[in-house]
Every structure is written in C-alpha cells, then in structure tokens.
Length: 199
Image (cartoon, rainbow, N blue to C red; front, side):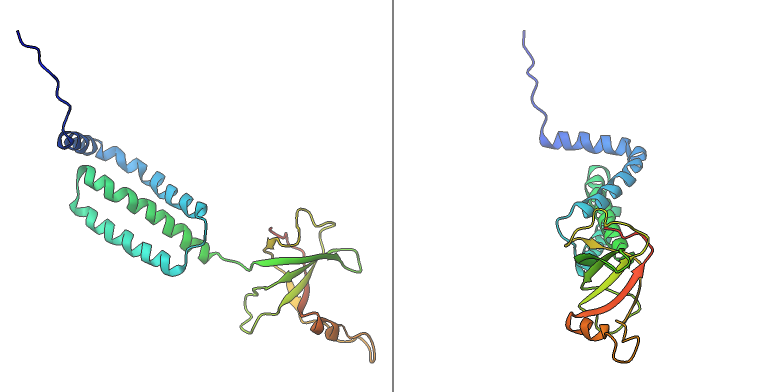
C-alpha cells in the first residue's frame, strides 16, 4: 500500500490558475476601473510635492504607451498592465485638472484693521489675473463683509476675488500723499473684497 504525497504547486501552475481566474472574471473587472482611477487621483493629492507639467506629460505618455501594449496582453498579464495604467491616468487627470482651475494664491503677511474697523490683509507675492506686467511686492485688501479674521493667521495662503487699484494720490493739494507712503512700503495695490477669503 502506497501513500500519495501532495507536491506543492509549481510557480507555473499558480500563474496558470491566476490567469484562468482573471480570464473568468474579466466581465466583473471593469467595475474596478473607477476605483483604480480614483486611487490615482487620491495618490496625486497625497503626493509630497507638486509634480511639474513636464512630469505629468511624461507620465501621460507612459500611460498611453502601456495602454496600447495592454491590447496584446490577456488574463493576469492584462491585469498587471491595466491596473497601473488606470492609476496613472487618475494621477495625470487630477494633476492637469488642478492646473486648469488654478486661481490666484497669496500669502498673508500681516493682519490689521482699517479706519472703519474692518479686517485688513497685507498679501505678499500676489498673482493677479488680467495683469501682464510685473506683480507688486504686496497688496492690501479690506474684508468689508467680515467683522474678524476668522482662522486666518500671518503665513497662511489665501484665495479670493477682490477689487484692487493703485494707491491713491492726495485728495487735496498739499494733503497726505498715501501713494508716496505706499511706494516706500512696497505696497503696490489696495482694494477690498466682499467675497469669502478661502484659506
């Protein structure tokens, strides 16, 4: 009487079984497409730094090439190719979308109050849409619809829509020249906003 000994499956046998399992579940695998794409977008937001446009385009090219190559793959090989493709596509989509909707971002340098006791922000390195010339060093805006600064602190980055103009000249001959004071304070613009300031 002989006892049969079960031999451990070979690597080739395991791969064949996985390949067959993927092939049999191929119709259900499409349901994981948005999950993998979303995981790529989530990876973009968890990335420690902002990838450059060149890096995003390079990744987009690699994703496209891998997607083309996946046409000749099947079973497990297809899954191993298409999963990184979908994750990479989500990453690229989130990165390019973030650049498409980019809005002016300013750093709060100081907080103060206007003569009418409204909160006032001194903002550094402004980006002003529609202005082709060199940007001023700082601009100051008054928050006309707020009574306090809320969670804002110096050093915060903020976005808002505001009306900004050059510092005003004296209102009467020999009067106080705010424009001169602003020049030496490197204050390139003043204005106000009645919109929420997003920190």
